[in-house]
Amino acid sequence: MQRRRPPQTTGHLRRAPVACRPWAVEGHDNRMRLKTLGAVCATSAVAVPITAVPFALAEDAAPPQPAAQQPAPLPLAAPGDMHRAAMATLANRHVYFARRYHRLLGDPLSHTERARMRDAAMALPAPKLRAKTRDLRHDIRALRRRLEHKHAAVAIPPQLEAIAECESHSNPRAVSAGGTYRGKYQFDYSTWASVGGKGDPARASEREQDRRAARLYRTSGPGRWPVCGR
Image (cartoon, rainbow, N blue to C red; front, side):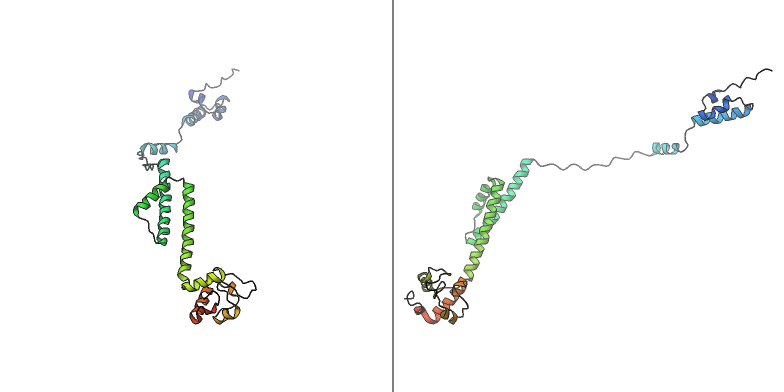
């Protein structure tokens, strides 16, 4: 009995994927089935995915988008310019407080004096200039307190000022050796109470002692101080 040779494979079957090759080598008799299966396997080996085409065409057909215009970068100032600007700010601040201080003194600065002061401040190191400005602000606060106290002080005649200097050297906390006479004007307790005072005269504020002494001087004259009122 003559042995039947297996059918010869075509080119399509040689290019078929591995999953399709067993059908080509097992020797089936159905030649039509082998041809059909070989064509299907060859087609699946070289087919291009359908879903990839529309995206590729869409990308090719889309017009190129113009690139977004980037804003121009801001010019950077040189370090020297920044230092000069900072020093100018500190100098102007110092001159401002100096003008306030001199106005409180009743001696305002002229334009030339302000310009000279500003140039001198620009020549100082920044830490030293800040320290001088802080000291100037402290002087302004102290001067304001002195002026407020001066305006609120009681008007004292020169004779009463001389009595205070004679009695206690103008010390509002002075107390005599025996403890009887107390304060700036050396009140005893009964005299202090007669002009509206309460408590210890030496513990009262200097302004209150001036006010009580001025009332006593106005109503009784300098005779209430027999030694220093002569």
